[in-house]
Image (cartoon, rainbow, N blue to C red):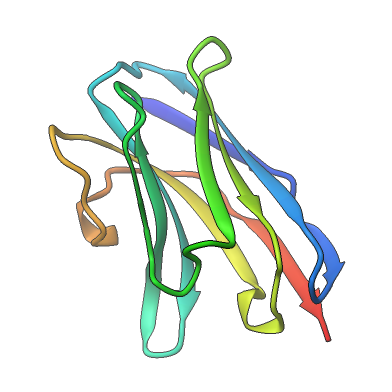
Length: 124
């Protein structure tokens, strides 16, 4: 069992920055992939970014490339999502998720463990 707890959400003006954190506990290992997701029109949740614990390879949605950066601190068992140049359309609840797999997946249905979410609101 893996537990995930997100933090760092809040209210920010357009063009501003926020850093989200996802603290993982339980039976995590280097074979896990960690992802960030958010709701989107017509979808329950859409992929934002993912990172592998081992090696640190990353993947991003086209809509956030160049603005968001995902990273991890293995010693703290924490994954971060640095969000810069925020836009009003980035407003959403952001969820952290974990998956034990050899490759990164972008489909949320493949992720087994989920956090409770953290609200990000970007004002225009």
